[in-house]
Image (cartoon, rainbow, N blue to C red; front, side, top):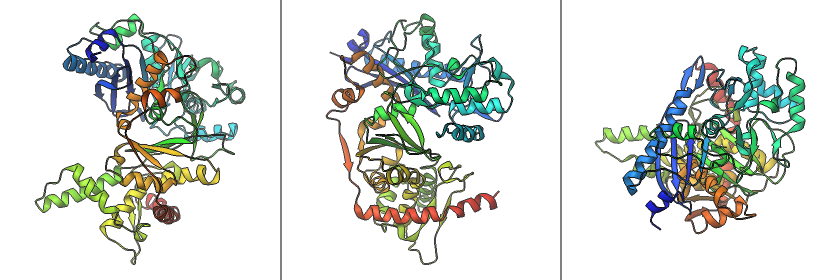
Length: 529
């Protein structure tokens, strides 16, 4: 059947994801193939010393991304978009959105980027015996309580960005389990908020607030469950033109970590994915709970509720990009104009000629703080000894290794100290655009095969559309794992590279030097105010 007819009949699914700088909408057909897309650029604001987006930013951006999608459908297929088979909403993880009894936002949205709840996170980690990062919703709430913020007494509902948008469109106060696990710890067995930790938290705050935590949190749903339908008001909000009809079913809203796992087919135990761009994070689906909490590892879940160990690092390609730009400037001085993609390829491929341990060179890519290695502020550094082998190949290899340096510190805890088994990991993001190079270095860093698929570039909005399709297309008893294997990724093109033993040994040597040299960066933070 022609795509235009499928769209008219609503035999499609729509995923919308709110990223840090762009809101993307992807429409897929029954086979989860993207047929149209739209986007809206936005930037966070510094409001009262808090990184935030206003409600006008959020809802205006939602409308902008949908309008862009509808225009793409009209331009490509000559069809006015009036309905879709199902919709899913995703967004950047966690943060703090709280509302009163009149559904009024009590304080500006506090995004994941804010580190203001670090003290509360540390105290809750001690209380629960479970790592609570500063960006998690419960950490933000407890910090507000500790700080005596006036608004806390009026809270009747707390959610995250995608939970808020979903609520506005459907009237349902629900959240997908992957995102819920970053609001408050969940029990992977019951797929609900952990009751033991809820009681501990209640005992901690009962004299300070008029509510129990479980009473203000959204209801948890897992992938495939019905999460409500588009209301008439929601249809008008999403599409002010009035073309979109109400009644469209919604799947549970999920965070960008969960949609990334879906978009890379990394929800099975002993699989994982690494997203490498401005920041880098690894998610590995665990077979069992870790023996103890680690500040380097966040415990979240897949969209079906299986436990995941997550290592999230703030820095990846920004410093690397700066060096590539510097070489581009030099080329321009010579009167040579080199396309950016070719410049990256030339420099990345040159790194393969370097020594396996980078010839004794050392680099830190810390444009911003890095909690995994306890560095409080950004101080990018390149360091060498007088007898280090300083040439272009080793220089570029050191900076590419550095892009995975902090990530390796966290992953080594899971893979070496905890004995977590990993059969396959999928890489996606800008670092893998140059064929082979970043992929082989990641394989060396984690000691496991790395697969890069063409579809991974479609991103989290595509993953969210897949979750929407799964809800309406799954057969009786069909798991998300089976649906992804058989209905989405079967026959998909991908390249898998096994770790080269010589590269692994070389990366281990670099990693020893990297960890030993961390005091250099911390001293730079102290000395370079």
